[in-house]
Image (cartoon, rainbow, N blue to C red; front, side):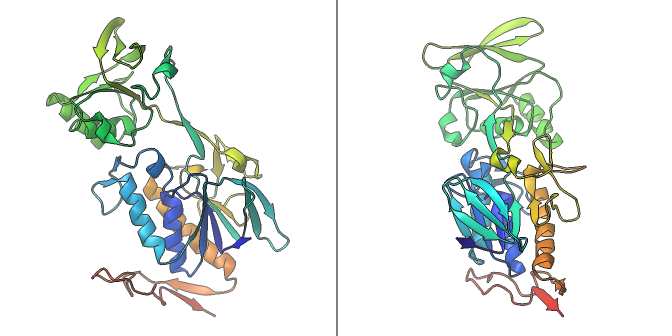
Length: 349
């Protein structure tokens, strides 16, 4: 049986950052993830997607963010159970938990942090006849390697951040990029909307709104789509059609753990992001509360406060003062690794 201080369900960005914050408090972490590698969606779905809202990084690729988080937490030697899904949870007499995976691996911890992002997920597919016929034959729901679109004609459908960000990114990769959205207004970040409009004026993006993709064409591989705007159908040539309408999340087995669920997310308090079961926390996109924003940086904040609460639970009666990590430093500026700072947390009593 694997024993640890904090058992983290989900090895996406929020789960990985939890390792670092817990490590500063001298708490050991072990992570479970159904994917074969850490990083969650950032690794599995869009490792080459640029992310713009990570503090200190004007732009960073999702895969690079994962690598940096792994490097940041490596000094605290986290454990990993990868390629296995957290299946059941049992509360012990002492208040701790045993979590068993679908492959029978047992994990014992006094604190469980659910950082499963959107849980298990599948893309929301547009209702287009024969779309399955063209899947992986010109229709892609995710972009893992932007280079396959080099000098190709690409049509993207959607109005959220992913559709906007990829349209911007591929404008310098593909021979042509067309963005189709059923409304004139977009759901993405204002800066991204403005950038798309700028690229439209520069003739680097063909923007068609309000409009919908209503048909796909091609014998074996897709070679065109029909766009309907104001009741008029227009057939556009394309090499790739990428519908980006978001993901349909599913909590999976975690939904049967007795947690309070609202709209397929886990309800938590905003003091420390604890669930209705003491000792079980939910952080990142998997949780919900009034004012919730599904942003990676919000997951980092939630992980930090969660670790503070976990420390108090594991060290009852002790007061502590959290010092800035700049007091002792974490890594040498010359690239050499130092021991984790011994005085980051000062326990009193």
